Length: 364
Image 1: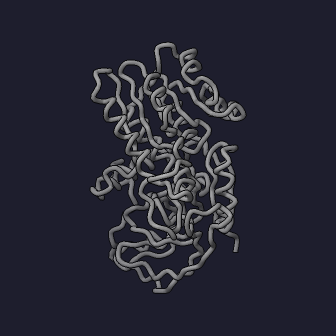
Image 2 (image 1 turned 135 degrees about the horizontal axis):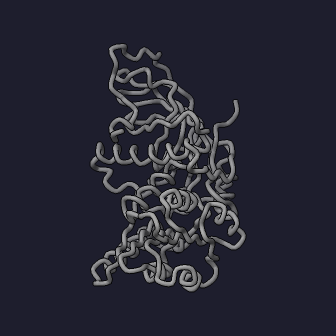
């Protein structure tokens, strides 16, 4: 199946869309500023009918990711100015489409990567950005694989290019991205060492990884399992610990950094820690050390829209197919109604759960 065929077909058919033009009242969760989770605002907004190329999606599930936790603090690298509606990704059903699109799209379950706006009951989205979701997947379960699945798949296969028989280290192996990384790596025949808190060791082990305690001496624990180092490290923590991650690489190994959680509470410009991390990685690549270092950003290449969307759709479709076939197991930490997003965010920030906290549609 080609990347183009993985995307929802958005060309108009001979039968034009005859959906009645009407507005839709959307419930939205607004982040008004640097506030505590309990101070998120529940609002309503009228959405116009879909314009050309747009689809109206009724959101069935949307996630609480580390990005929203950073946005609440004003620390996400390129977040919009306050106030805005957070929500990095979603799964929902198409309820209406623009007049130029095939009405057969209506009723289809889809996934979308949004960066912001997903914490809504309804959303207008470009139809070419929607990816079909297999009917076998529950919306909340499928949601755990949208941004997490794309991120994990691309870091493993497009950046580190892992191979069966290798050994990797995944930091935060009990988290949303981490738990997906572990599972995808195990499907590929890779041995995984997963760092987490001691209380989450059993959960990490159940995913198929060898757990180590992130509060202990990570280098010593990894060397005890893999004395010659590891073939790849996936690090969302950043900060001083990134140096140890790089030193743990075996010759020819790859470090993929994809965040700076260690600096999330630091005062000052939110971009500086990321830029400093990026500069360090680039410097390491200039050294004759036979190791590679990358910074992963899911939005890299977005300016080349068609190629970007095809790649995202292809990778997400691969992940969702594995989930639908039972090769990946969704890690839903908890489900909250959309209107209780504040409580969901508090739980996600507690770091006491395995997997991803998901917001689902409020009951009528």
